[in-house]
Amino acid sequence: MPQMPFDRLDTTSDDGLLALFASGDPIAARVLMQRHLPRVLGFARRTLGEAAEAEDVAQDAFLRLWRIAPDWKPGQAQVSTWLWRVVANLCIDRLRRRGRSTALDDAPEVADDAPGALAGLIATDRAAALDAALLELPDRQRQAVILRHIEGLSNPEIATILEIGVEAVESLTARGKRTLTARLAPLKEALGYDTSF
Amino acid sequence: MTHPSDDPTDDRFVNRLFEAARAQPEPVPADLFARMLADAAREQPRAALAPSSVWAMVVQMLGGRGALAGLGAAAACGLALGFMIPVDLMPEPTVDLFPVAEGLIALLDAGA
Image 1 (tube, rainbow over the protein chains, first blue to last red):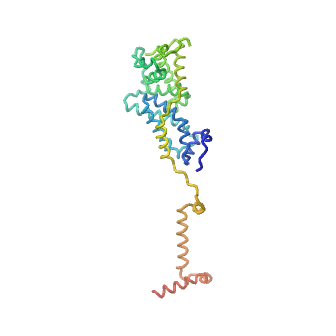
Image 2 (cartoon, chains in turn blue, brown):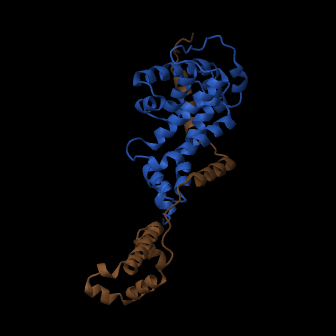
Image 3 (tube, rainbow over the protein chains, first blue to last red):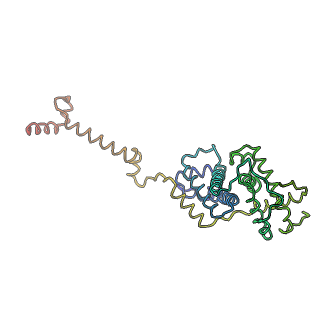
């Protein structure tokens, strides 16, 4: 089939791009990856705390997307939501294999006096401090916080991705944010933030 | 367990960290992107080929190579039947149209 111009593809919907991919367009996959890969890769890295594993997960998720492309029903689901969900589940699978996943309901909050492996990291790098603090959250709580506060998704979107209720999302994000604040607040000055802002 | 922070700057501080993380797109390693593009190329359904010649267009119009083969076989059968049918069964005008068939049958009879 004739190839669509790149600038036209750039404004084409995800559904449209997937249909183009399925019909043999050679550029559609690249545009879909440019559109979604950075975010799902970041989500996977923050969830897993491991760049190499996150790359494997992102690659696996997109491979699944290419395979279902011929059967994709436009309008039934959003490609982005589908990708987030696959990545979220692949991450949880890996964390379970590591033996460190925490069930949704028994997720403990972080103790006040927990020592900081964090403290050593924090001194220099705010991003690393945030990532390290996120890694101390229970897995599902961490995913919900990342999706809500870093990726900026709505609670209903997160509920669809994590396959839980909206109320559960609200609970996870509230508890997660509270724990992060308790962990990071003592480090405000060390991270160079003016406490008066 | 953690206690809710009473200091509003704590919350603002964490929000700043989130904003900074949001503003920093995740870098995608070039080799990962290349591997994933290769995956996509490998998994991509092949596009239907556009006809490259008049003959290819005719074949496509007739329903492709399979349909064309069937059409050829049917034509061959029709022709064979036309030659092999006993002359006695043919209506008179048709016999006139197939003088060769009459001769062929005569030859076969002679051979038998």
